[in-house]
Image 1: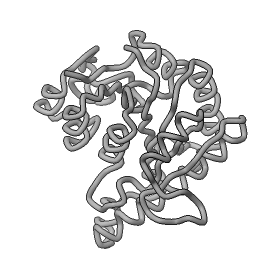
Image 2: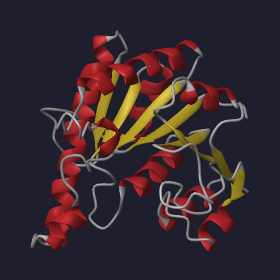
Image 3: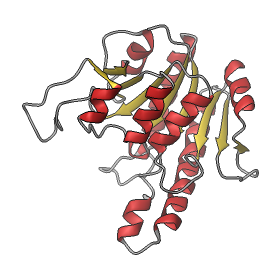
Image 4: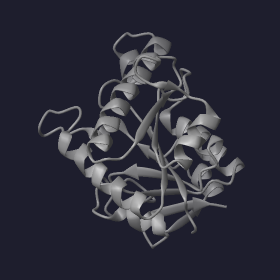
Length: 236
């Protein structure tokens, strides 16, 4: 797999440390900085879509009585907090970074403009996309697939806590087996919950391979970037 430009989908929970009671763990941010430094040394152009589940989820808010649309906008603002934290961590290790948001907030971030985002990537800057798609009822998985399509990414990397896509939840089912490769069609028909159907469909239509991998395994993201046997690849 020849890869240059990647879109990394990073969940808000990936920044969280429940044991320490931290919504955003500085040690995890520092680890991300080290991993990104290694990728950039390999020649990668990196874009990131970050979630906000460590701070607020629209669906959870709806269950608590918050209007769904309002809750989704609150979740979008949470992703912007994570994007700014990630930007600060990357700049602390000397990586030039830009945050671009789907909701207009010029005091803290640039508005998303496709050509400008691509130019940032060409100049070696990491681009972090906040606020999802800017629309309620769309997940950050869908935002990742959309942005990957818009910036002509070679691959969408989905960062998780497990080393790929399994036939069932490996945390609950010890007999679950991992796929090395699966097609978009099979991923949709089997209703695998790693990404939502809209994200799978958009990547399928635009022929963007997805790699699901364990973000917390040391060096794994570099192995995925190099095309080594790591994670699960979803493609035609």
